Length: 453
Image 1 (cartoon, rainbow, N blue to C red):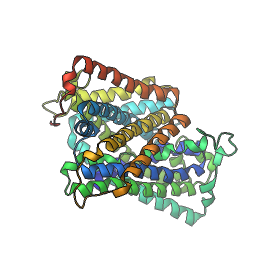
Image 2: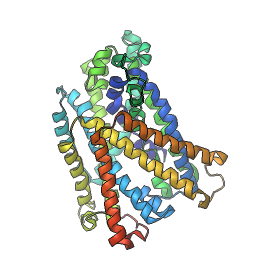
Image 3: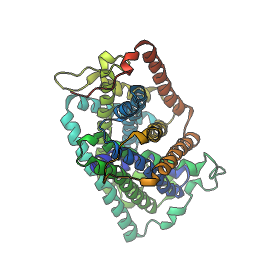
Image 4: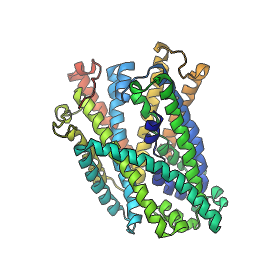
């Protein structure tokens, strides 16, 4: 169970995708917001852990909320979960293109090139998801191992390089870098606050093991431990890598102004001979993560369509008899990514990360509220994970933290496009839910079925 949750918390991807924003907005000093975010996310994880301990029910938030509250509430969870995960592949692939592949092949920084590469990656991954679930599984297993190795090996290598060469400095850890002198540095929505995006986009996904609780042995104990343990481990390893990268900066200006600062730092310390092999290995982790999220989103779309709760449900509930995969649902995820790359103005990566950070916290807030409402109806098992008398205080503080996180992202990094993405998907869901309530209420009166291929 721990491996499942830890695999869903992608330390490397989160840091690679957002380190540039931290250096530009707050300088290295902003990295110290990462442990603050970690504390908040651990509180959220504790609520999920308590939930899982009292009712270890398999399934995504769609099935979870449907059974604990009612199918109508479950639909809301499912819609948000589908598009929360659905935005992830295009964000991961854009980060892969701009932070790994373009530096790897010495391509000049270019938003257009990054978008073209993103679409190509999405196409390749969609084909793999459609034609081989076995390859998806293999790639995911490889990516998880590679990512863990990257964090440890790269961190140690950077510290070793600094100690051996003397190039780098611990003074970097408390520097404002190129953000020094900014008039809005400490303001609400200013440069320092914006640095929280790194932690908020990295320390997520820890709830994954709760979705497989019925398959776990002694789920009342193992699943809660996996949820909390994964976010704690990710926070420690993530901070280790962030500190290593920051100490290893030789040229603050070059790193801060680089479109791919992690690659720039590796090049400063190791030279191109070692930088490129490391980027290639890192690219594997990115590719595997995007592949799995495409597969995961297609399954949520299929599940909702199977229960007649998704637009064009007859088409999106189809499973190809030869590949045994939901091809239309997979193509929908691909189409979403392509459309985003074609029409989104400005810098795509940070806008996708920001929208994802907001979307991640919406289901967290909903789940905490759900727990506070239904907790007295849930049974307790002897020896199961329990927060005891701290159960309600932890949940209340966690809920407050989630609202703070949404506020921070909204005022510091969000753009009009970000709000259009989030608002558009939420509004379209509200419209479709209204249609179901008025014209097809019966489909919202029954619990969702069991996913089968």
